[in-house]
Each structure stands twice: as C-alpha cells, then as structure tokens.
Image (cartoon, rainbow, N blue to C red):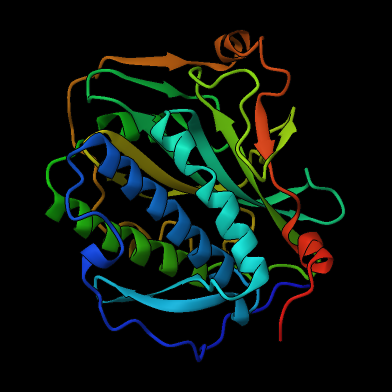
Length: 303
C-alpha cells in the first residue's frame, strides 16, 4: 500500500472532549503518570500515521480531545488492532522504566535502513533530581537533551496546555512536509534503559542489533515536552521532506514548550561508548516491528 494523503473521514466524532475521557484526571501518582505518557504515545502515533498517509482512512476514527479533533486507531479494523496491541505492549515497559525511546521510522523500500523520516518519543523517569538519560540516539542533539533535562512538571492544567500546543505544532509541521514517495514504508522501533533485563522484548517486537540512523543533513525539530509527576516525554522529528524555506518558520516555533531555565539537574548521562558497555549482556539492544505495509498484505482487511 502506497502512502495516501489524508482526506476527511466519515467516522463518528466523539463529542466528549473532556481530558478525563482520554487521560487520567490526576497525573501526580507514578501509575497515572505512566498511563498518561503511554496514551500520548498511542494517540500521537495514530495521528502521525494518518497525517503522513502511511495507512488509509479505514484505519482511523476521530476523537475530540481538548477541543482538537484527533485521529486515533479504529478498533474494528484488523490492521489497526494489530498496531494497538504492539503499542499496548509498551505500557509495561513504561511502568517498569525499561523504555528509553519509541520511534516511528519511515524508510524507502526495500531497504529498511534507508531512513527518510523519523518521529521519536524519548522518555525520562523518576524524580526531577534523579533521572537517567541517554544522549546517543540518532535524532538527538545536546540542545534537545538539555531541553528534556530542564523540563519540569508543575500541574495538570499546564500539561493539558502543552498537549494542545504539541499537537498543533505537529500538525502544522506535517502540513509543511512534502508528500512521501510511493515506496515508503514504516516500522516501530524501540530502545531500552539500563534497567531492562537482557532478555526483555515486548510482545510484537523482534530483536534487532540496529536502531536507526539518520543522515546528518536531515532537518530536525522538537514539537514539545510533556510531563507527568514521574515521567517526561519529548517528541522529536527528523525529515528530508521539509519544504525549502519552511523549516524555522515562526508558525512552527512560536508555541510554548514545557521547558524552563533551571540549574543543571543531577542527571546521569550515558554517551555512546558507555551505553554500549552497559548493554554488553544483551544479545540485541533494540527491538522493532515488522514493516506496516508488508504486514497489511499478510493480514487481509475487512471491507
């Protein structure tokens, strides 16, 4: 299936836009904080796959959250259900503090390592002065890492506003990306923290000795940082498809972000060589799913 431009869908819109219909009403506890960031990953993944045309209209329905109409996975579609199960399998990885990064990697078939675009969700765990962060992922920069380290949770109202800001910025950015080539496919990829057992792999993901690599010339941007009381999640992207002259436009960068100027936190930073030595006990340090379009051909979809 080739990438398809998004069109207006006929799915029923959920008129209940209350925050509590989608996310926990309280994100102070560790359990609710984990639920919040995991649901954000699920919702935003559907948003990206829809707006980038990786999957067709029948894979999504529209849900209203904070007065925003947001595409989410359609639970009566077999392919969508399979993707939901893969993302749901990451819930325990978040709760157990095993998941370091979740990435939606778009590449040019047939080479899965010919990466053209990446949307990355990076996580930090723990109290604000006791957080371990990896800084060697392919999309990362020192500025992005410092932004994540400097973000703080204040209250639910602030997080709700940052959710709105992040989705709006993501939408505006995607509208300024060129249409994907016909032979584009995608997969989910994950990396782990040092807490993950050496044989740990969420259901639906396969062991991999590669994560992803992006070309140095790719344009990168941060869409937002969302905080629960025990978790931080940063949404980043890198793409070769930003239209000339669009990147850096104030419509992309004028939205507030949950970043504050703060003293250097007590963060344990693990750079490339150190991170590899920590993972010497793992047979494969990463995980990834089968390609989405290949999976679609294997599983016939209902009409």
